[in-house]
Length: 235
Length: 84
Image 1 (cartoon, helix red, strand yellow):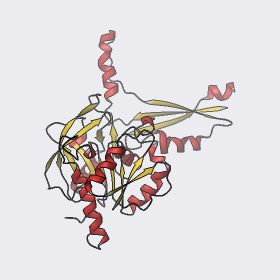
Image 2 (tube, each protein chain N blue to C red; image 1 turned 60 degrees about the vertical axis):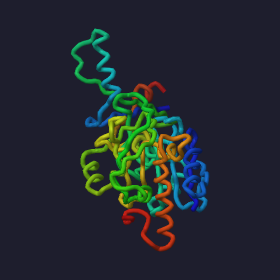
Image 3 (cartoon, rainbow over the protein chains, first blue to last red; image 1 turned 120 degrees about the horizontal axis):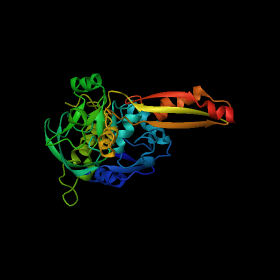
Image 4 (spheres, one colour; image 1 turned 180 degrees about the horizontal axis):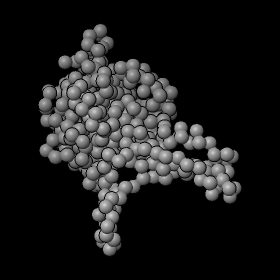
């Protein structure tokens, strides 16, 4: 399986994301923000960082990067896409996910290991977890406060589209402790903390993050054998 | 030359922690009686010729403001138009 990792000007975690893909057993394919095509990848990761220096709003400029046209088309077509941190912000700015990420309520940058509770295993990126499983991954962001209007939040919860919640403390004031969400089809997931930094014992607080990357391999394997479609029906 | 000014503000229901931090600092300036501070962004767009409000609106809607959390307003800066 080929999993693309996009590098924007100002991306920081593209290297770790590619490494996580490799450790999970897939081939990482480095994509450039100016690429017109996705080079036959099966899934895409939008990594963390500060694309375009966070000018205007986080993700606002990256949304208009050339590669995002192809990513958005592929996402609407069902290709699994994972946005981590800045990648989550880009997916919201691109309207591939609802809501927005705003300044942490306490105004401090938060950089710590964070417990999450997996709230949906019905996405292309979380099928290898157990519903309700607690995982430990780093969070490192200054604008990680997820906001949306009440109707959108109610919809996300009613449709099981909250993918993970902060537990044992909310690091940024996100509404309803939301750390990760998915789109209606379950192929696009945005997560504020960093699973790609928790894939091996030497460098991470756990290896819990690896589950996101092994999940998508399972989803892709199922899709390619004509089995269950990636997203929404994995359970 | 002409100038169009775009004001972007967080929607009323969106918490503005920066504005709150400023409001909380006011007593230290000896200022009392301020009940709320909210912080927005002013963007000045200059056109070579006549002000193009339609284009300015498109820029504001697609890029300058995030409609999920922000509202915007647009106005021609008459002082610049006359002074040009």
